[in-house]
Length: 456
Image (tube, rainbow, N blue to C red; front, side):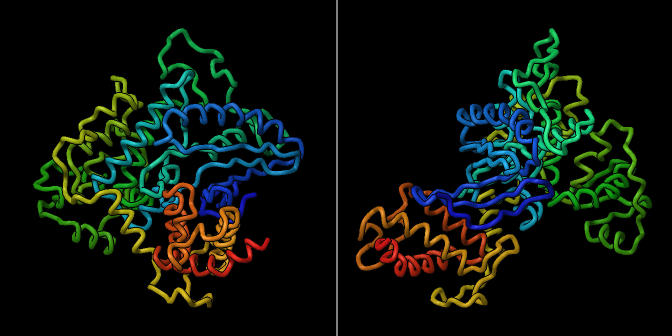
């Protein structure tokens, strides 16, 4: 029996995401519910079952970089289809850059390495698999801050809808995206870039999406990138005399630092040009990576890596995930670019920004807790649900299993020590409370609930 702790943050789409706790193992899981209208369940299953089975096989080979799918429930007609997968306590890359802004080079290196390893696993499969939905919300973090790639469910549902619409199918949801064999109309050329791939699209499109993901993560969000494009285009039209990465030369020869550029923007001195695609060979009409990041300190290796990804579909020489894993930017021995801030330190910064001020853990008033909008319940109810699930687990262990001396110790009841830390970190992050406060409140509630659970 799963205990629902609340809904998870998500973007637009039809999928409902819920955070679940499994009392027998005290493992946090994520439940994705896909609505299916009458008569569409079979089509939905035909569309997704082969893809989800293939993902599980690939994930078993690389559990360190691919999100695990635990189970799929194909419910009767009219009920949602449910996919149970592992829950990532530290949220997504999208949430990290929203909390902290642009990421430093060391953090971006760790993310690029994990995503490329995941893409290499997908693209090297037989038949090759394209992710097709690579973006910051698809990169999720474990309790240790390690990045993993999610399985792009929303993209496949959108493709199902588009396929159904083009075929004039009356059902709103869901039609197959690919043949289960993945080999329909395969050309004689055995290259992974010309063979049809599971999920549709191109492996090179995944590489280009990785470049865009890196650019968005470095700038601090897609909105920042969109705002930067007009100024980068203006910079690209100037003579290429760049004395430093933190200043640019105006048309009249005067040097402009970052503050001056921002001041010109505020004064409406610069009018944004029309958003037309450029004819200089840059990817999707984007200015050069160096121009977009003119006021930020990134190495030449990083700029070259991002440019190579963005231009993957236009280059005459083949670009692949396996090839990019040998790129200079990802080499551990290369000189590191300041600021030397790791991905772990960025997670710590996000945690500090998320936490409310320390409160009395013995207090029970809802005013003592800060609850993010994604949590439907008050902090007391949320913590109570967690404590209840843990108490049920404790009742099976017998009395004294969770005590250390005369005190309750929550770590003692978890079969896997890391699962306890994941639950505490996730609960603290959800409620905006310090981890130590969450642990004290849970242990206080468990002290009251454990006798009740034992009696049941």
